[in-house]
Length: 265
Image 1 (cartoon, one colour):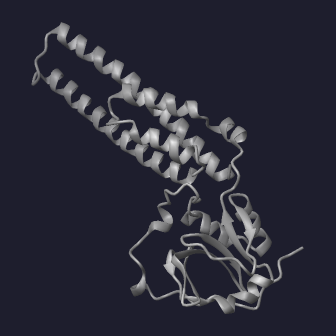
Image 2 (cartoon, helix red, strand yellow):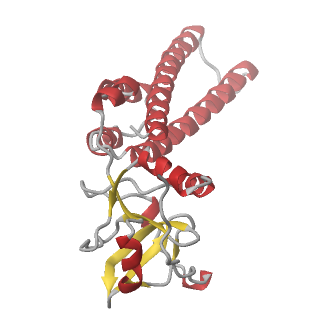
Image 3 (cartoon, rainbow, N blue to C red):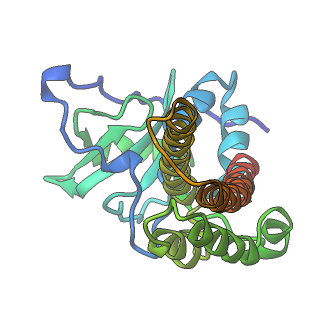
C-alpha cells in the first residue's frame, strides 16, 4: 500500500546569506547513539527516487525507520523523513530541535537551514504516519565481516608501519575500534579514504625522489661506490615492496568499507 500524503508542505529554504557556517551534518557525530549523517550523494539519490515508496525503500536499505507518534519528542541533531502534500524532505534537526513550539532543522539535500515549522502544523502529518525518525540500522556483524573483518585492520596497521610512509597508526586504531565496531561506516570510510590519499601522495613523492637520485648517480652528480650503490638499491627495493603491500591493504579496507556503505550493512 502506498503512503498517503499529508496536507502539509514544509516552508522554503532560507536565502544563502543566512546559511550557517557549521557543516557538522556531513562530518559525522562521535556520540555512540548517533548514526552516520546521510551523505550528499545519498540525499541526491533519495531525491531521484520516483515515488514516496521508492524513497522509503532507499531509506530502509540504510536505516531503521521509526514512525513518529503524536507524543514524540523531536531529538536534537537527529534525522527525519517527512512526507508532505507535494514533496518529501530528508531533514536534520538543529540543537535545540524545538524552541518556541517550532521545529528547527536543515535540509540534508542542500545542507541549508529551513524556516522553523510550527509543531501544531506538523501534527496532521504525524497523525497520518508520514513522519519517520531515522535510527541506526541493526548491524549484521556476520554479513558485514564477510565483506571486511577486524583482521583486515590489523594487517593494514602492520603494513602501514613497515612502509615507513604512515606517520602513525592511531587513526587506523580509532577507525577500527570506534567507527567500524560501532557501525559508523560512512564516517569510517571518509577517514580511511583521507588516510589512504595521504599515503598515496607520500608514495608518489618517494618515487619521484628515487628517480632524481638515480639520474644524479647516472650523471655523476652523486658519487657512490658500487658496494654502497648496491646496498642503497637493496634498501629501496625492500621498502618499495613494503609500500606496495601497504597499498594493497589500504585498498582492501577502503573498498570493503565502500561496499558496506553501499549495501547498508
